[in-house]
Length: 493
Image 1 (tube, one colour):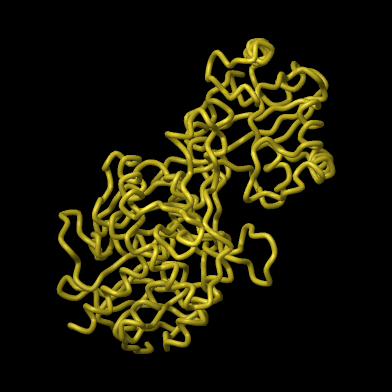
Image 2: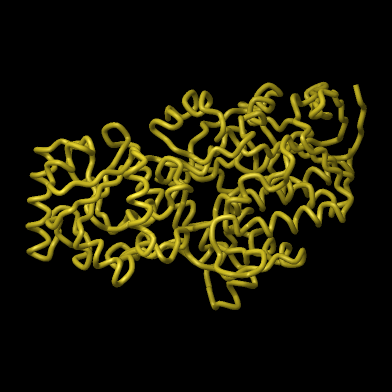
């Protein structure tokens, strides 16, 4: 067995692991970072940017949101069911983290909100300008994967600081002696075992989005049946199991809910085209929320998770399609292509011919309901009620914005099933505000830390979408906090 020794060991090199590695090295610690894949960055490579409050970017844009205000908004949203000190320290550190990244050469397009609430709900649900979107490599419009340039810069910074990366070398076990974490057991790609000793260990393995069994056991969702989450290869929940085995307290993991289509990246025009305030119904044919609020993907995912069969149906007619093709979508997307409806029909016809299960088209409402699996009687009653409200110019049920009240009346009719999606899992490891892992009795386990989504227990039951970029923000800042505190413990050892 190969022997290694260092000050701090970081388990995994995703966003939180990179942040922890850099912060520990900048604090004077020698760092070894183990990563099971052949690349760094993890799920962050699919993202666009982190949350921050009080950053130079926001100040330049005259965004006057303060860390204290963001903290209070977050705690009110979660009804104080989460660790207030951890949340407070995260927000107050987040602005300096953007400066930290900029010093590494990371450029940002700007700070923005992920969505703008409708006028009627704006005072209660509007997004803040917290999302710091990374400038894509080579420039151009930002979109999914823009944050890859950030993870590349962080990886370069870690290398410059002398961090040792052990790629394709997953950690299998935390070594515990006398109640203290003193190292790890890892295995190389060719089967060689490594015993690496250290003064502190930081777990940053990114949750269990790629573990269908664990998703069902821990959250009740069935992967590819009732939830279609991003499944970044390798995110099997290893860190959670290692931490629990080492005595870590267990918090209830959740899925970071949104909504999306199966294999959505290969059906991006279809997915984007139906994210509009048209008619949304459940399997019984009944509306279940005001459709002008679907831009808050967390709330929409929550609503879908409580419907019969955990599925919703978005429906529009040919008249609406013609309007959107001419004037553009009613709700603009920061994620989906800007030419949604120019490319819609070609992809629609392709997917219909291929038998893509979530979609169907019909010339009559009865036929559409039958094809989609919606109660025909319930659907026809709902359309009649909804169309009457459209004609009257007021939604009697949900008070949906009258500008979006367009009747369903002219075939062909288009329908797309909407399923729960998720960016991945959240939480499971109990930590304190210094990111130190604690037992179920809230005793600190010496030498053991956790950061990122493994320990992201700060959202309560729902992602706070009004403070967008929060998951990547927590990964970065909890990683920095963990790296700094682990290095301090290692130096004092």
